[in-house]
Each structure stands twice: as structure tokens, then as C-alpha cells.
Length: 105
Image (cartoon, rainbow, N blue to C red; front, side, top):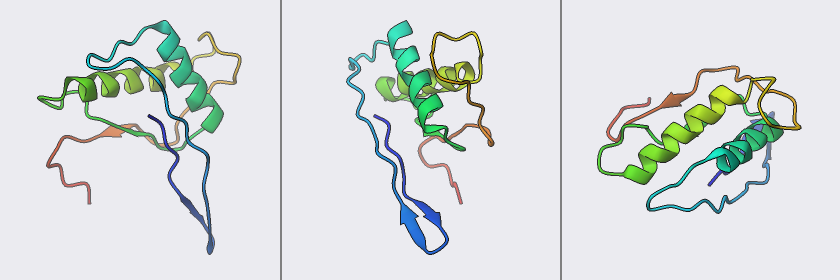
């Protein structure tokens, strides 16, 4: 699932529409169509930062699969040769993942 978080711009808040992705899960099965969907969403939303599950979250196989899939899509998003009609997009900040119990403050 991809949801856009509220953004603060001056004293106003703005929201972007999110999308629910209907990928098969338990196990999460990811192939080229799912990667194309994720890359197109990244290129459409053009985020500065993207948060995802940790790719090595022990005991949560779907969470780990999701983390690996999103990290791969982030790698594909700036590639001009990737199968997408949308313009490539690079992130301003590195993708950061966290494991349960990590202190992010």
C-alpha cells in the first residue's frame, strides 16, 4: 500500500491522494508488473523521501519482501531505460529503512 503523508507548507497543510495496491501477499509475489506499478507511482508522486519496511525484519516475511521490492523500485525509478512512460525520478535523500526497536529520533 502506498499512502501520501500530509505536508506542511507555511501554515497550510496539503494532502496528496494515496493508492491501495492489490498485490498478492502471504507470500508477497513480485514480478515485472509489480515493479512497473511501483516505479510508475514513484515517478508520478515524485517524492523526496520514501519510507518502507526493513528488508530484514525477522519473522515478517511479507514485510521483508515489501522492503526489498520498494528498494528495487527506488533503484529503477531514475533509470531512463526502465519500462515506464513517465520521466525518471531521483530522490533528494537516501532511502532509509528501520528495524523494529530502532530509535529514529
